[in-house]
Image (tube, rainbow, N blue to C red; front, side, top):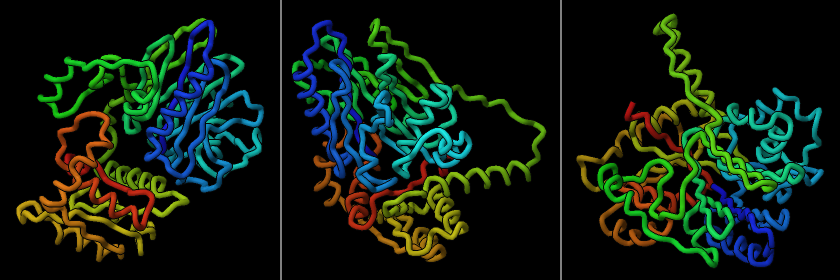
Length: 376
């Protein structure tokens, strides 16, 4: 988890000092997302990027962002992880076209865009939100991943576009105003979350999943579009055995790619289908031994899955940690955890997960989790 921020201004009389002060404020406000490196760049009198980096891939300072190509024409600020970056690097023979100075996914992502343009986005695997500036075409693009895992908020005010990984980052900029969005009340109390591009503020929107925004500084034209659409056409020719084997292959490949990191990685273990399957696949790949696993221990026996968690941990050889989420712990962490939520969320699991993450931070930098398997 890194943090990105940016200001794109359309004034005919730029105020670079004011914008530079605001991009610093915005980046400072979300430093908890990436405490390993903080960097802001004035890319032109009209474009400012910031980045809070959490070092996961390539721990060197050479991979800090905002990151430029050697010509300085292109610059990227990036949050997330492209899990198939090595496959794409090989597929498009990037080593033949570029001299790499890092070993991470950021540089690969930027060079893929330089080589293939927007068409490369549909080939990316992982979770991501990023902005790329092209100084020759005077263009900025914002892109969010297929499922909307990485957040990306934006606001048009004062002849400027402000964007960031967190709402509170945009709100920290001077000279802006924000009003409560009453449209979200009915939806939130029905669904327990806010959907689509809506946020609690009328002046702030969220880029949706599979969506990109292209901003031209030459004429101020803004185009928002989907860069990918899903095809759910059923293949009736595949047998049950073939389908079963293909699901296993895809899951194994996903687990292997996502577990790739240069920083210590741990796993969450709920005792349910998703995390248990994930850990067993890691075990088959020979990657689970002595990995730190973390579980929430619920005091209410009707919800407690400790026995299943311990069984999977013992089978896969993890160093297991059980964190008790008592009523007292929930109360003690309630307001602290709210500080990290930009939007209201009715999921009661957020506080226990916050408690788990604080414990896990002592040993690992990344937590590998399963989501959705139980629902399937």
